[in-house]
Length: 263
Ligand SMILES: Nc1ncnc2c1ncn2[C@@H]1O[C@H](COP(=O)(O)OP(=O)(O)O)[C@@H](O)[C@H]1O
Ligand SMILES: CC(=O)N[C@@H](CCC(=O)OP(=O)(O)O)C(=O)O
Image (cartoon, rainbow, N blue to C red):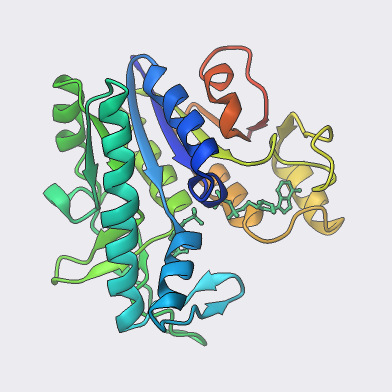
């Protein structure tokens, strides 16, 4: 099968113009079929605060009320997405900016209210991705660039975690391609000590993951990222890597750096 890279770029890199430029330069030079997924939570929080829309989180996850869904639609689907696409065009990488609503690529369901009402937040059921549209873009040599937004097919945009969008896109395309999912962020990989960039853990399987959780080596966003990584590797994705955005090119070869997630 032909190889496909599904690459997610993290919020701290998007927030740093120099790092973002370096990353996009590397991304543009990745040969073959590829998809880029981004969020932009930090920028949304900054712009929202300026507009009087205070961020509201529960256990690190954004609660998305009526004003916030408008905010993130503007920031993720507009500002961040279109700037990335324009940069890629300048680098000679023809690309198209998409949300999950465009061409009905990602239909999601609003997260049911349990103890917490997350508001306009989407979860992606299996088999709800329009893969044939993506394949048609690949056949025209156009790279899809996804913002962290989906839709519910009832006229609503849903704020959807970018790591989850990346893993679900990877899973849905794994029947047709040899997919390598790469989570790029500002650290060298999953670290034994989050303050020490030399403490990269080369491989994590389920047993080691449980041990790292018990030892409290992992906190905040890295936990849902690893959960999404396991979801992908358990559902047909060939390889999943978590690494530094500046190591992207190495991570598209056999000599990967960063952390491999394995069964
Ligand atoms: N052991 C660890 N190794 C690497 N990162 C960790 C670890 N524990 C916690 N983290 C935190 O997880 C964050 C990554 O999650 P998140 O901010 O959601 O990613 P993204 O940049 O992709 O949006 C890192 O910036 C880091 O602060
Ligand atoms: C529902 C949900 O988690 N939405 C995220 C979407 C952005 C995102 O995932 O961005 P990063 O990957 O850069 O954190 C949020 O609004 O923060």
